[in-house]
Length: 266
Image (cartoon, rainbow, N blue to C red; front, side, top):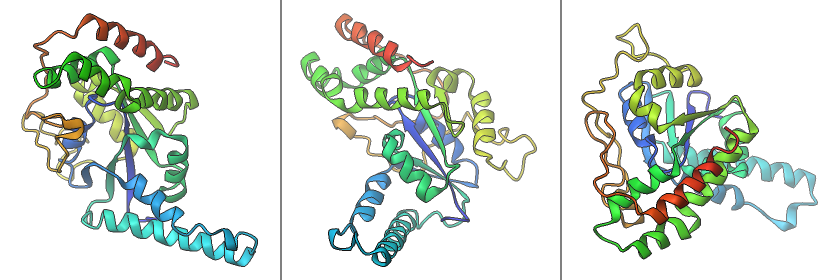
């Protein structure tokens, strides 16, 4: 549907380096990156807007209905990414892309070979990261209610990540936070190969153009998602953020059990 654009879908767990990697990849002039996106919800809204019980028995009308859906969804995508005029590759960030129905939607409108990158990290580390951002403004009871009791952001994403590993699709790449931090250039080479990204025009090695000592986030993010300040902060150099406050034992044990679920299929 979009012959001149290739979409790469970022999904997976929170606090796993997806914003960092997107910021690094944005240094390539062929790549357009934006913040966390509502596009999948907008596509479904456009798709369902032409649902009509009255035409389902009319084959000719049914065909026109499909054409209308395709046109509306295409228009939605083009409108949302109207500023991505020069770049061939678009990184589309939404944790929802791992849902089975959303993957089918992506295949239908982005092509059967659309690539999805799933970001993972041991859940106790994710909880520790959230806890260090939140502990000064909320109690342990509120932390549990906002991060662990609800389905989002942890439980639903674990289920989706497990399913993505179970289906073992060649079009899904799993990346670990530790590798992004400790072996950044190796991860970049893996991503370039997986997505068939073109190298920077001024360099022979596809990843040597990336400046890992001067990283900036060139796109907007809702840094107060879940009412958490600095949620998508990207520092100019790559390093593991030190957690000054230790994760309480009750959350540590929960995180360790959830990690077993996350990595159940490898």
